Length: 260
Image (cartoon, rainbow, N blue to C red; front, side, top):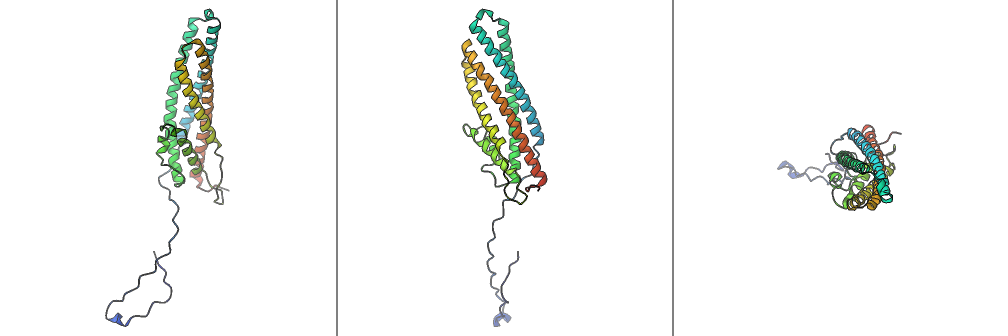
């Protein structure tokens, strides 16, 4: 680093011939503004995970659609059992139990697979967001995973991470100014997802407590509604995943400034 001195150098002192010259210290440099945060880490493509997640969500939504039909079948069967018990065959009840059990196992397996793939994808796009905008997050990248498992906080932390990642993945306008990209896909997905999660908890508790035909008739209707809401949440999740992945792909390829 070089320092600028003002004016000509002072004349030599008469004592300079007898000993070393003492040079006055240079003036203190002016304080420079702090540099912007520098990106750390490397970008990792979320494309493959997004594709896998789209497939798992689509298969899960199909299974939920079948499950909704099974719940409606059970509801009709319970209504027949309440209206005319003698007209309901044991084979019909056995078939309802078989279908309900099979769809339940399939839904559980697909939900576990979706959770694993989604959290891996979510953590990856969060880390990419850190590269794009190091100062754009209120929590460390680890909360992209931990936030899902903290009671009550998991109703808000993942959404905040998703919003911040969305903002960090958005390019600026061609003149470098802020460019707003609607975060409606994030909000819509999270709102319906939370609603589906709450309904599923209510349904599970009511299903376990249902020990009469009348109770099964009522809870089956709730099960069908819960499945439909879960399907909507899956569709919105696909939109969110594909949109955020596309934002990161464009920003990685074109840089932080959008093309004119």
